Length: 294
Image (tube, rainbow, N blue to C red; front, side, top):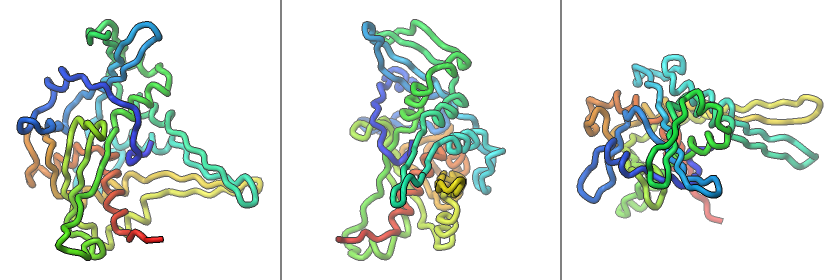
């Protein structure tokens, strides 16, 4: 799963739970996302062929590193370490299969299962009327098929991001680049998001962009037995480092029940998900490349 890719699985949200666990902004606006929410239910509507029911996977993020302004170290951040384990387990491989042909292999379900096992607190089974009738402990949930665990993880990270458009008064803004970037994030379904967040990011410097480009991808080549192959992985640490450097604020989210203020920057950085940081950094970095006309 790449976070930037749209996830086609549709979440069946628990409206009662949502009312109980999130704050609301102005009337008619999307609710505020509590970034420090400890337990996050992810629901999948399913059926055994005769009876409809809902599987609610209750996931918990381990607490992030204590000093989010320092260069991130996986050992001091158990959640980031889980994400790095997931990334290492994703299979992305180009294999040469002929003189001028290569085959690309990609698999993420087992990697998502690794992440699920590190986050699951319990699973609650609800009937069609949303009444609980069974429950699984974390240890029992870890025995679920990896495909089901992967589905829950994909729903958990369902997110879409977009850059605010340039001011039309500056016709060459696309060439000069921005000094500030506003990124809109829709969490959940794109057409009917559960939360809408708006981030403000500073323009990354030339030095920061070069460092990111040099470190974001890890590529390994193999020429064993004349069979050439290439394995790739994403270095999340590079994305988290750059995001933490350029982050300037966010609307639509809270930490400890309070909206963003500059003095709370460290706490907000601590709770913004690393995969979301990677998603937004990718969007910003792609904006520096000019689009070519055919």
